Length: 442
Ligand SMILES: [Zn+2]
Image 1 (cartoon, rainbow, N blue to C red):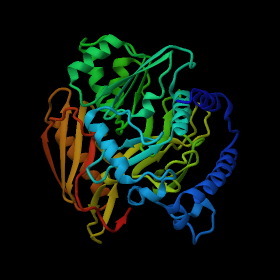
Image 2: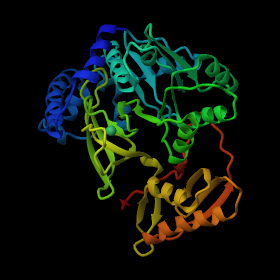
Image 3: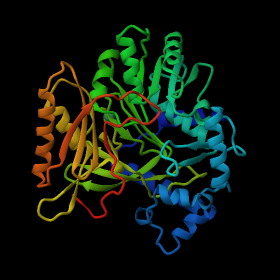
Image 4: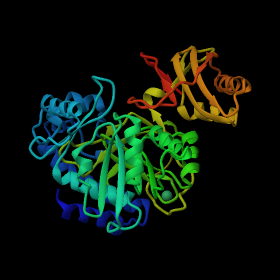
């Protein structure tokens, strides 16, 4: 690990890189992207081909998604690593739980997802040092010289995370596939100052603390990898008596982090964000990202599969980076309804569903709403004082949502709340319809 590079990136990000206006951010990004594109077009056969008939104004170049990224993996990356080779190594690492092997000096990561839909990512040693510097600058409370014990809960470890180690900062990987008792013992013994975990795991840790199973007082808690729902956020914050922070990090990069006010800001000093609005008035959009630092596996105008909601008011912290109200969910989890008159399918964003559930009844502790088909919604509720009123209220609020948009009312069923933290990502709002709408309208 190139510690010097890590430190340089840390200092740059934490102390030196300052922007006075949105305009200066844009000027900075344009300059960086122009230089980056020159490199990418020379070294990536895919992009050279893909862009050959286009003027090189980056803002309007053709978009790519995960599908193209995986389909053309071999020609996109600039280090000549084949998908086959990378995939084999990543799967082997995941099975053996030994995540140290690399191809030459390149680390391989594998995103979670259904088989056949998993993303592979490549990070060079230099990029990994820069990534670590950037992450530490944005996440560490206080200075780099302060001692920190970081507990990191992940589905798979990666060289990338290991690289953040130093004398002052110790990094402890908690494998999410391990049993809960092991986690309890290790946490209790380690007494981490920082915990980074998916919200479903954080909620469980908070429950352990509440029930005096473990005694820990972390200084900072960071939610990653799953959508953070208000119901979980409130619970975790109450138990630990602090603001819960978030990192929006995907195989595609280090995308956003919360500021001191707990507001998510996109990391516009390392990636440029363009918005593909789904509902402009409400600020709901799908991000198209251009990363101008990663050279090994370049991401230019890459459309993420996420729905984000922008914040309507400036953040009190003063940062000019795009502020988010929330990460709403995956595009695949948008609900659909059928219009009474036209028969067209209309989108219902997770945010609408979440609000309807949470506003309907105040004693809801946990919930899960699943769209099973266009006319069938299943709900699981966990309520403070078991009360049959809750189901009727939730049903009423959801139906109101469908009625307002003149959509045919779905059948709403209630089943027992039986969810436990498992290896699978937990979603509170999920669409499990296999064939999604072909003609989407709002
Ligand atoms: Zn802020």
